Length: 232
Image (cartoon, rainbow, N blue to C red; front, top):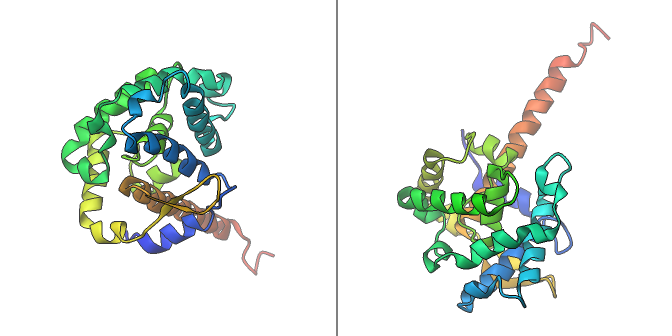
């Protein structure tokens, strides 16, 4: 299967605007990465920053589908994210340096991170919830949601899947690194100087690939059930 990186990326980004839901990633990522760049990640759960950290993470997760009534997280207020933010604030500097280029050799480190984040939730946290959290904060792994799993051809978050992502980056480094996609600034709606991480580019490419595949399957089903001219 040929994946058109540039075309998929463009199709995904066509839906991004300062007031559209996809931009919730930008604002969340900006919040946590600003602390990283200032060397203050350990202060993200301080009394004067805790509410802002929870609100940024919570709204991003909500707008990315994690507050549906079918899930347990729907029953919690944003205060339920306090243990998650405290775990984020406790993460070592090495966690903040992870990205897709590490996954070929450091998949175990990312798996251990996913366990720590999963255990910090007060509800049963799915692979989708865990990876969306990690993507929005650290930017080191794609979100294992329905469309990404369909597009990438994987079913669960596991070491082989992470290593495949790492190999995909290694094999397509030039095309993945070439697009200069910057996060949007909340105040101005304009680009910041902060680039999307590699894992986020891969996330968008295969999310869109999953959308494309499901759309083609739906069109095929409709064509198969459409009456022929002789039957109409």
